[in-house]
Length: 81
Image 1 (tube, rainbow, N blue to C red):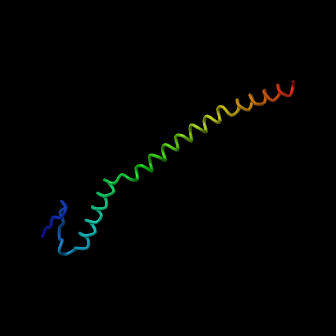
Image 2 (image 1 turned 135 degrees about the vertical axis):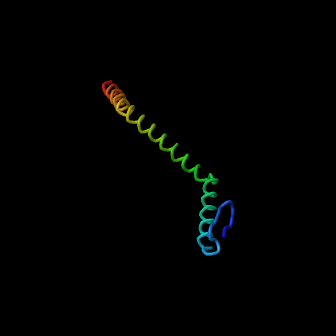
Image 3 (image 1 turned 180 degrees about the vertical axis):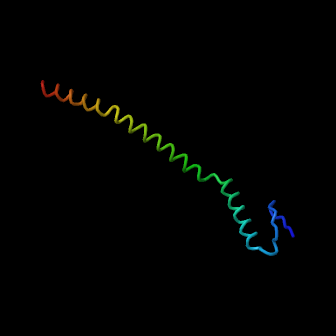
């Protein structure tokens, strides 16, 4: 005996209806997850945030030491006058 439901060929559907129902539930869930795009927004924001953090941390490390030297020189010149 064969039964076809939603394009899925189910053998022995009368003997094991719970297995067939479970299989169709899994297939339906996978199709819904495949077409759903709400989770992509969160992933895109997370990647964007990670890139921005890497740029900011790199900039602070690169300029941080030079900025400290500039402020020290200005402070020394102001105290010398």
